[in-house]
Image 1 (cartoon, one colour):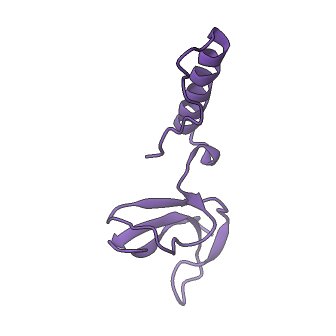
Image 2 (image 1 turned 180 degrees about the vertical axis):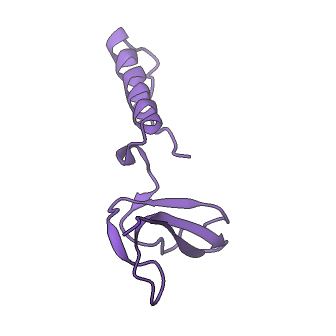
Length: 105
C-alpha cells in the first residue's frame, strides 16, 4: 500500500488556511489512491528494483511505464502487459519477478 506523505508540518501556531491546505493534500492523495492513479504511488518506477533498498517477500513495485510487451514465454506468440514486479526472495535489493497479464493477442 502506498504511504501518505505530508510535506507540511503543523506549526505551533497556524491559521485556518494552513490547516485547510494540509487536509486538502491528504484528501487528494487518498482519492488518487482509491481511483488507482499511479501518480499517487511512491513505489512506481520504470525498471526492476535494484540498488540498496531492502525488500521483503511480497513487496510490489508498480511499473510506471506499462506497455504491451513481447511474448509471454519463449515460443509463445501471445503478448502481455507488465504491471510491475513482486519480490520473491527478500534481500537488498531482493529477487524480483515481473507481474504479467496476457492481453489476448
